[in-house]
Length: 298
Length: 298
Image (cartoon, rainbow over all chains, first blue to last red; front, side, top):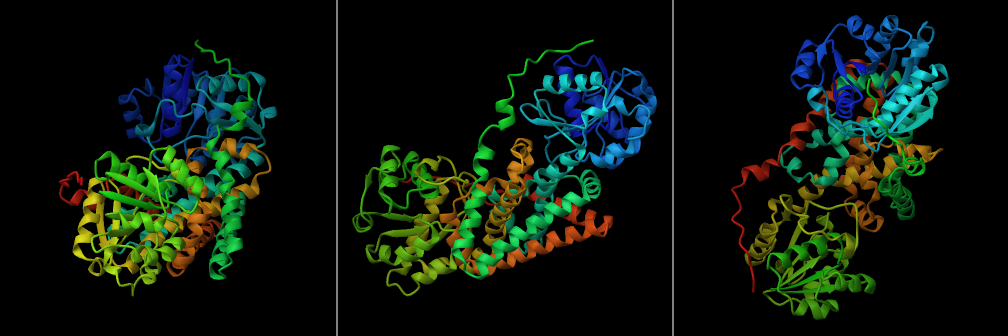
């Protein structure tokens, strides 16, 4: 199967690496606005050829759009202009309502399957691409009734082949949920880094930073170019989750100021309820039947 | 050397495990208010005997007080009542001003060395004790001019032997710094867990939680019994750091509401400056001369 990856970075790069490894891809074409990224991806063996969007899409069975979400919304109509009836198009963006809106009236809308694989690292670019990044993680497929079944089927098969479970929901529910479990934690980490950097009178502060600090602040290393458009596109739900978060911080603050031990313990004990959710394997993954993963080659 | 550990949990337990492994300890006595903890520590081979505070301290060369910080402040005067001139006492609490105040006028104050090893996990109790927990991390020794040099020397030797670098500062500076790099990240994680738990309409939310969420929220699993007293004892600096944090979150919120891309990118790019601090080995550790670690046995 011939696959095009548009935007060869952490997610798209990791995805095609896996597809090549498991025999899902016979040839991988790369499209990138930055010629250096294309060159690096060739050198790293992530893609076989670099091509223009039109050249690449018109000869591909599957097109993965894995640019920052503002670019997805911008180029997706053009991608759909170039498809044949059997070309499947997917994106991997962290927001969905805005992206789907950009193509809602496109003649080839039903070739497109909006997805969001919930995996990543704080790194970006072709060098950040990793094999096995998606193993045992969950991907979301949105608004599947708007895509032709053959396209949804191919995407499901591909995600199962790279080891992911699949959750189905509307674009709106995905944006709402993702605001809480992904977008908010990024803002929390960016702000924590800024708060601690503001205090840094001596270099010593970072030497003292133990594993707990490193873990909490890790996402502050994330790419502004990727995250800026996400916060903008998902403004409504990002603000909702951020306001709930600030309110919980204010409650904690109040418990300290008022020396209200019972409130403080209640807040901490409630937070401790996150433990089984974090320690257990994801329950959807436990519940779903053992995937019968087959290799797909063409 | 005979060592007593008072409060056999994550930190004290891990510390004596290392001391036994490297031959620093010949015999380890355990003191714990909870008889079950003492029993578990015996079964796990962390301590050789369980004893009362008086029995244990009066026959020990080194006493490690590793209880929650409210208990440290309470029992430290009693520990110092039982020491001989050659008994060294240390604590490992995350706050220092309050603990030092509790013994500032004690006749044997100079036997006590206040320390804070910056390492840990979100788990607690004797089962949480780990070998090698302190390797290549930094410990703080506070107000060293108030301790007799022989006691400071023993503590330095012990920390070097378990692989730690040492930073020296006043109790006040330690409380101020630790508020930012340790206490604040814990509150950030507790509040994040609470915000996301409040949104949990479907179990699915935790299945979607990817590595980024897990990392950011990990500290929310921490023990309320340990952390409540820390936030109380370090109220002034915890509130200071929390207010700076909430202010940075509000700035981020404003950049989204006002669609002020340049402010948003400035905030994210500033936060990215944390990367070298997190990726590099701690600079103090790089700068200090290779430790000439010697085993100490008696």
